[in-house]
Image (cartoon, rainbow, N blue to C red; front, side, top):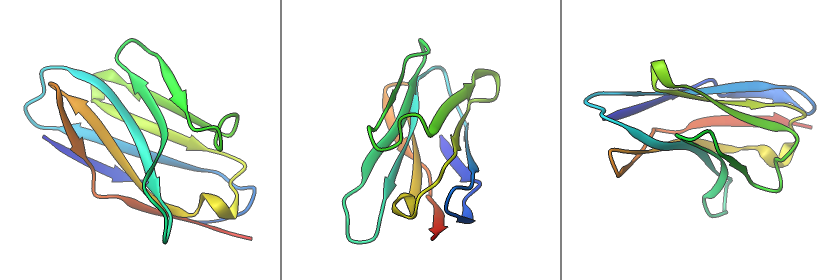
Length: 114
């Protein structure tokens, strides 16, 4: 199983970006998929997660600004990021709990300029 993330880039504060992460390979079921991020000098932190039952959870710092969604037919998870702030600058990693095993994507850099 592989997770391929895309959509990062440079954006000005207040702007928007959408990240995508597609899972591929021999997949029977996906329990949940989500996004973490790691800023320079900081620990990796959970950003948002979406379960197979449609339950979503967000870090307090992104609530109301980020939206996680899934296309189950495509085994893809999206992260719509709006009202971006410089403190959102980080490498964003998608992860999936797939067939009860945790997988990580390669990370995509999001840079928010002030």
